[in-house]
Image: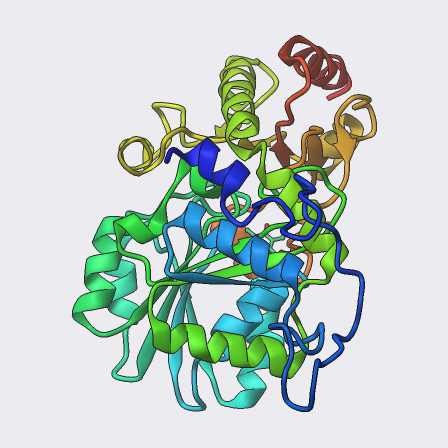
Length: 379
Ligand SMILES: Cc1ncc(COP(=O)(O)O)c(C=O)c1O
């Protein structure tokens, strides 16, 4: 079956007891045993519940994984994946990674004996140069948040597999509709489902998609032991959102291209970061491995003052953290999503105080552009 069909039907069979086309929300903490030691497949909602199981089946199918586990947030999923490592292990991470991942690694996981090196994963030489004998994981965001650097997944997949290193790819920015990292060689895919997978900005959620049974067993153990699995209502919301993922991504992508081209031609904008522009340094790799450039972009207004004036004037675009919702969201990474990154790291990866990030929604394109244009008059 095709992607859109799978998104609508896999894990979403009609309820066997009533025929309801949408399965009920199993808002219950425990499940009654028919006799001692015998249950109907569920015993306690921390361990598992039908809404979680359904969503996990859909996500695994869409990413082409063998299994998936869903968590209370993207960070909970990412934390679970890093817990596959043991004290003394080393991981190489994209330097322009989501700020929360940087904070998790440098302020929390280091205290448990893990070692991290942050490099530009769009350069294979930088990745090779960072490898150590104890490197066990390569954690890649592509495109990166917010500077949209693209890593060559097929090349990194080979590099990792040849050295028995686990390649983890954060596919949040594109969703499996626009990029399928497992087909390119990733061993694990992670998501903030808070973003495109749910798509309606009304729940948080995360996913870890696995290709190897040994990883799946460990991740499920972590999920049920740490109690970080996604709750029934949130699973229901993400499952509902997923049904329109294909059609939403088509429109996000079309709107993203239109906004990027418009801003790129605008005299007040110094630089637009978007893999769909021929001037993007990894444009060719993006064309090769992505079904489209997506709807995430960033642009530099030159200074914090200019960015502030612009952000205080937008009306349709909502000034908010997060991305991937149907509504256009706009933010200033240096003061918002990436505030936890030290200034010198931010500067090295290009997150200046004038850098604005845009998550282009699926409103009418003329309205989005008109809003950006009127706010740019204040810059
Ligand atoms: C690329 C990326 N990965 C992971 C996360 C973390 O996800 P969550 O906020 O659902 O914990 C985010 C959050 O913005 C993100 O942008």
